[in-house]
Length: 116
Image 1 (cartoon, rainbow, N blue to C red):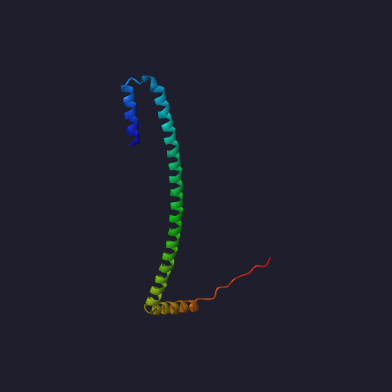
Image 2 (cartoon, helix red, strand yellow):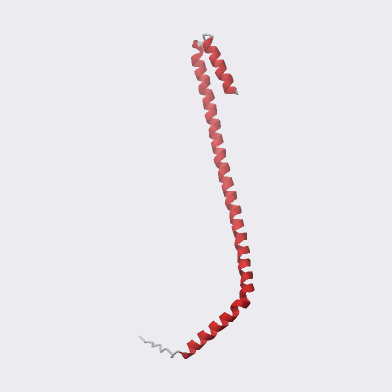
């Protein structure tokens, strides 16, 4: 809104024969541009700081959420393990018996030790 006012005033001065005021108007435009540049830089710095802080907070809460999910997931895996244990236990028992029988039927292996 202010820029429209400035442009209107500049146009009115030029139409009214204010060509002698062009250097002054140019100086005012440079001053306004410098002020705008400084404010834009402050805005950029504040925006970057805000993004960094928001990113750090996001990573922090993400790690907390991932930790909670991992603990809950481990609890679910343990619960399913106990729930399926009656189905798997007979198979494990048969596998253990077969392993024990094949282990006892094997010939003993001789280990030679060399003394230096």
